[in-house]
Image (cartoon, rainbow, N blue to C red):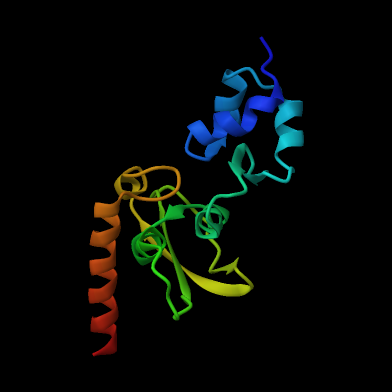
Length: 153
């Protein structure tokens, strides 16, 4: 039975704000409904076969645009929601080891950020579609800090 597109927002929100076309087709939506919905005011097509709500944090969609999920210090900064005067120069994302061809730079809020990739299939699957879990992000941040301080020596 075909499901009315009026429910798409609620169904995608129930899936964490990001949903695959296959999941939505299984719920009864048509490809035409997904195509029309994916270019709406409250929605966007992340990449082929994936849709998201427009109210997702920009960091999350930038990570998806780069081919991964939010990770490390980028996820921790977003999770803290603490006001900051420092504008980040990097976007940390996690990618499965099988991924390839990630961009070196992604646009975010009118700036170009360098992508720092954390290659780990286990870490990639540790959290949600928005990002790795908090424990993984903290471990990644410690590793990044050690790597950065040893590069400064």
